[in-house]
Image (cartoon, rainbow, N blue to C red; front, side, top):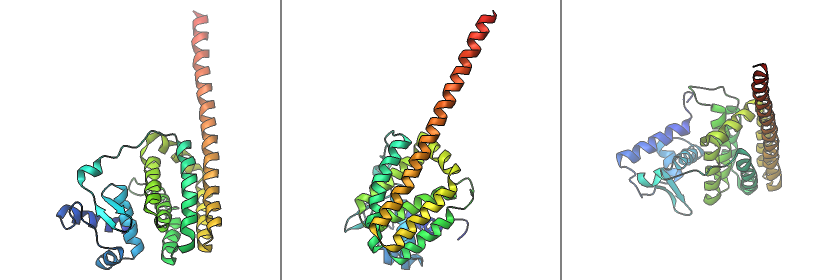
Length: 248
């Protein structure tokens, strides 16, 4: 499916069933295996669809109980805190490094194949106004979080990603850095995947941590450049003002 990622189509079909009352508020969705059979897709695709619906506040994943449909009123209440890009990236480094370590030992070949495809998608061009690379990047990290098998950790990583994509000042910094460091980003995600292939928690943790360390360094460089630009602009404005006054 070229125009739309397959999991997005599955997510839309599940959401439509919610609207039609097939899956009313409070009910538990069928398991991943059953949904995969219904939609004739892989369980990884179903898992990605459920992840996207959870990110939209339409589902709640309960440990040992599966995915439950949230009431529409409940799903509307979700205010994100105001944080800086540096604070967010530091938090992501701490959490996602450990999530990668937790996922590594038991990650499935099917999930590794999905991560492989997402790395390919990260090199995609912008399509229909949507940054395909950014979405693939998000899905890469959320797929690892899902593979860790801990719904609390997944919830945290998903919220961190929402802050990264929905808080305008944060997104501006990320967009600036990622547009300049696309090659480094691709290489680092490949190293993370290689570490997961080895199923070594220490290697997975280190690869993820290196990715965020480089990201933080790039953000600090951008912050310093912006600060210098502001100083020069203010100095130029002051210079113009006082010289104009002196000429009167």
